[in-house]
Every structure is written in structure tokens, then in C-alpha cells.
Length: 242
Image (cartoon, rainbow, N blue to C red):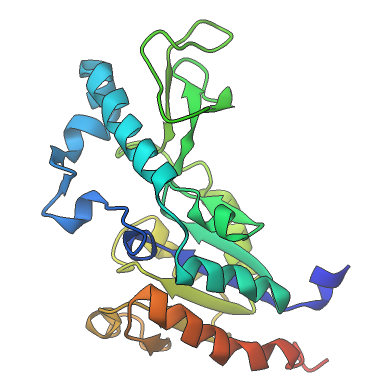
């Protein structure tokens, strides 16, 4: 009942917020992800060609995730649940939002801490520890693969994300260039007349495409705590003239 009385705050997060916890993505270095061409480790073709390499790559990413800690930006977004009905839509595959305390997180690109059947995508399992091996199979004896949306695959969570955005009273973007689709298209699902905020050190470079957004041109760890101060007064503002 309480959430029905609160404004709906929707936050889209990208690589920038996780980078400040020490987690990198391929976009940090000319298409390479920790020294690998993405087509070698993040496509269905890569899985067919060399599943051992793909498992090894994601095992390292999983180990890195387990060693990382939520940063000030993750914690600040979790704090906003005191004032708003918050949904976070993330392009990141780590679980730092959840570990910071956020209770509703939609993972567009899957999550590193789960595996799914290579023969039945509906069979998804938590991974204990950091390692997924060849020979680890589902109940139907198909090899388990990372529960990640690879390049060239559909994004199953997109429908949920679009629905969440359509109900937003406030929309926030953190740590992403808004240049990569389909995630960038979520901006067009948000109601036109609501407050919008953009936190990213390069936000100024992209504002010609999104002129209606209020920007905080800072890294997430400093920009999001400032955003919290801006948003807190809006929590008590009536919605739709109530």
C-alpha cells in the first residue's frame, strides 16, 4: 500500500556505475573486454566455437564481481527507497545494486551469478561460488552456460523494462552513454512531462540528443549522492495535482 502512495522513480544504470567499483566492460578499450574481442566471448557463435574459453572468461568476471563492493552510487540509489517506489533497470550483469540494498532490479543483459540451460532457456540456476565448468548440466542434461544476453540474442527483460518506464514519475540515467540500443530506447517509453536527470561525467557530450534532461556531469559516486539531495524534496510533491 505504501508504494502505491509513493512516486515511481525509475533509474537506468550502465557500465559507469560498476566501473567505479573496479568492474570493467569491453567498451572501456576499443571493443576489447579484458583483452578479449567480444566476438570471442560474448556471442552465441563464440559459445558454439569454444565454450571452454567462454566459461573461463565469465568465471573470471564472476570472481571479480564477488570481490567487488557496492560504491557510494549504489548505496545512494538504495537510500532513495526511503522516499520513492524505486525500480532500477541495469545494463550491468553484476549484483552490486542488490548487495547495496535495492529491492527491485531488472537486469536487461542477465546476471553473472546465474547459469541457464543451453538447451532450455527457461531453466535458470544460481551459481554457488565463482566457477561454472564443462560438464555442469541442467536437469535435462544440457550443458549450463552463463545467464547472459550475448550480442545477437533477444533481450527477454525488455518488455518488463518498457512497462516499468511507462509508469515513471521521475526518470534517472546513471553511467551510460544512451547510445546503445535497445536500452537507449527506454528513454522513449518514459512519459514526456516528467522530471528527467542524467548523471555521467560525459553527459554534456550527449545532451544534444536529450535536451530535456537535467544533467550532473560527474562520476556516479559523487553525482548520485548529489542527485539524492535534488530528488528528496520531490518525494513530498503531489502527483497529478492530488
